[in-house]
Amino acid sequence: QSVLTQPPSVSAAPGQKVTISCSGSSSNIGNNYVSWYQQLPGTAPKLLIYDNSRRPSGIPDRFSGSKSGTSATLGITGLQTGDEADYYCGTWDSSLNTPYWVFGGGTKVTVL
Amino acid sequence: QVQLQESGPGLVKPSQTLSLTCTVSGDSISSGSYYWSWIRQPAGKGLEWVGRIYTSGSTNYNPSLKSRVTISVDTSKNQFSLKLKSVTAADTAVYYCARDPLRYFGMDVWGQGTTVTVSS
Image (cartoon, rainbow over the protein chains, first blue to last red):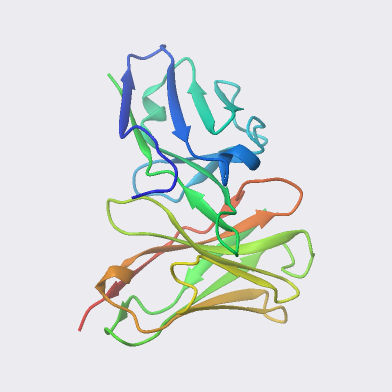
């Protein structure tokens, strides 16, 4: 059971838009920045979004991130077959004496 | 270009200690600009953060693993290491090392991962 809640899967046709939600609490998303990762099949995760909405160099602007309260959202526009992957949100949780990174359970994006 | 590479035994017996090393190239682990993390992923499952270390040797650990985990750094070799003791089959996973910048929130460089199986 992951600390952060994501839908198991989302799907859309090529060219369309998908959004992936990440729900947490005041001890994690509510008081910390969120990052998003893309994991293509058989590969290591790759940073897509940091500090809620910023994109690292080389990440296309089709990918966007936002945060409101204790939830965050990743958006992908102009969906491409190469976007088929698992997507994870991550943040810092400070509910215990020692803070630690937590991740969502992951969302599989399927391009129909 | 910064690269991280995990290394270590692919098979560990139950109750023994899992030991992995991450070698950093293209950047100095002593730069002071990053934490260095370990993350694991059981087959078909999600990511679980194990812990991290700063160049000073300061560490943070996942509370669920803290009693069994030790992360250390060797600046002379530009490496950091993970030891997980008293392993069980539940520790079987792909283990990744990653760079965790101080100046923003997100792990920006990852190793390719190494599979560790716990089995007799």
